Amino acid sequence: MQDALVLSARPGIISFSLGLPSPDLFPVEQFTLACEKILGRGSSVLQYAPPSELLKSHIVSLMRHRGVECRESQIFLTSGAQQAVNLVVAVLLDSGRQIIAEELCYPGFRQIVEFYRPEVLTVPTDPSTGMDVDKVEWYLESGAKPVFVYAITEGHNPLGVSLSEEKRRKLLTLSENFDVPIIEEDPYGFLTYEPSQIRLPMRSQRADNVFYVGSFSKILAPSLRVGWLIVPEELTRHLAVLKETVDIDMSTFSQHVVAHMLDSGFLVEHLKRLRAEYTCRRDVMVKVLSKRFPSDSRWSVPDSGVFIWVRMPEKFDTKKLLTVAVDRHQVAYMPGSIFRVGSSGGDSPSSLRLNFSHPSVSCIDEGMSRLGDLFCSSANALACAE
Ligand SMILES: Cc1ncc(COP(=O)(O)O)c(C=O)c1O
Image 1 (cartoon, rainbow, N blue to C red):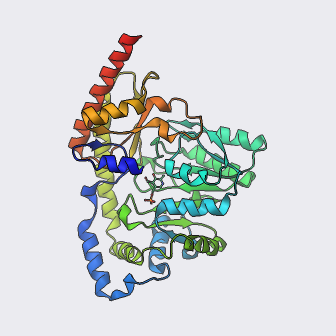
Image 2: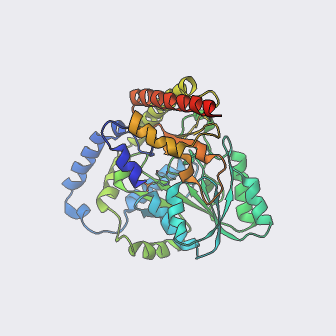
Image 3: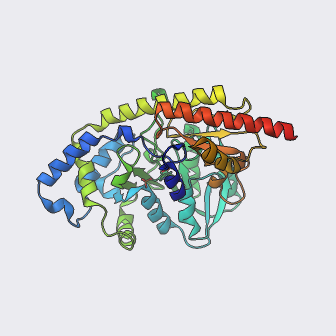
């Protein structure tokens, strides 16, 4: 991910690699006002300090809008979603135990769990309904004893799909019947694009077995490093002790900035703006995919998140083609194989993940046309070689 970050910052490169928010949509003016206001109150925001109760109460209200009822005492503030997952995994997982995750997974999660060398029981993902919950059931009924199931319910990274309501219900039932907690990671939950398709997080249905992970990275700014967990109250002390080993407090300043911005009530309008702009960027990407990519490439249009997963014909090797894309066409993307957990993940070597939130509409148009030309000429070359 760090390599991709360096690559996407290279001058002249149009990058579809990482899930970065659009720099044009950062609410810079609101940030400036918030900083002036909180520094105007004195220097205490620059000090070590306990987690902000005001921010917790804003998160409680924010989650209520998504159908999740929780209390301030169940909110545990973290330095981003990545740290939140890291901590909750540390609480649940011991070396060598089993976990359930999808065959194609967010690499940040894989990096966290690798440390514990777990036995990862993988399940495939359907491009339109999400995780194969029947396979989860099969594992559990066959006697597997996973310590958790990891799920990204909205705008899956890397596949872009959201878990269907039916599957959410079934997964919750399995979690209860077999007493297996779910880590519900939801950094894209506020970025939904079809108002008729609003789905509630699993945490809204059954509180105790779902460890919910949220973040302000994609909806305000990732440099704030503010995320949160919703967990049973009795766990927060344990989490605090664990967190202290790597991170004394979290940024007091960021917490106050976010709390102040939420006080002002501007987030509602800001989210509308993000959703409208990202819908537009997604649609441009889909239009160029349809027009310029080989006719046998396949994708689904995501109704949340920031990624489109494209399946190219099997003969394509998207990892090899990336070098050509970058060196000759100045375009970058994420090859599908890097999201594989173990040896599963079927057609991922011929697939790619594309991000549509970071590049502007004109960059999407230009970069996707260049990629389409590259893939069409590669398809021709492969056909001639056969
Ligand atoms: C699934 C997932 N989790 C976590 C993160 C990182 O979030 P944060 O910046 O809140 O740590 C990302 C960012 O791309 C993500 O896609």
